[in-house]
Image (cartoon, rainbow over all chains, first blue to last red; front, side, top):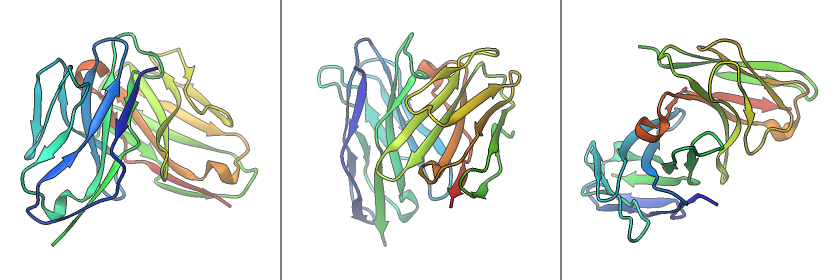
Length: 114
Length: 113
């Protein structure tokens, strides 16, 4: 079935380090791909998205490129800040998909130390 | 610009008690969803409503019921709470999930003792 796999966390980085959080997917069709961020004690917020192959989503210094050939959508940021500490969720959405349309990964917790 | 509003934010129940979690959205979205979030389990879909007047089971519907009261409101009811239902509950809505994803509420933290 359709699914999303994220790298296990937690990920701990020092401020200004480079961030990569891996996300791969399995889908029967052509999904849209999303990254959501959840700050402590809050709900999930859409961080960025890409709706077709080779699209790059970007927001707040974060980027992810939709790679159909490797079925991946890895999240990157060149220089993380303490304020980026949060849980990050990768998700996919399919036309006509069941189970509420969005399928989420299990989340990756990021901690950034000063 | 309220988005998705959930009430209450925190609740403690005794085993066997009932309660309803409320969710309302002001974005005129057709679809609404209830998820639970547990450590190490990610988000699990409980129920969803693709449009007013319809509801469908998700991955973990046992022990819950839902009502899509109108286009704005989608409530989740626990008839007889159990400790296994201790969790953080999120409501979300969408109009066109494949292009825009979901908008989430801020969550309800429920503890059943």
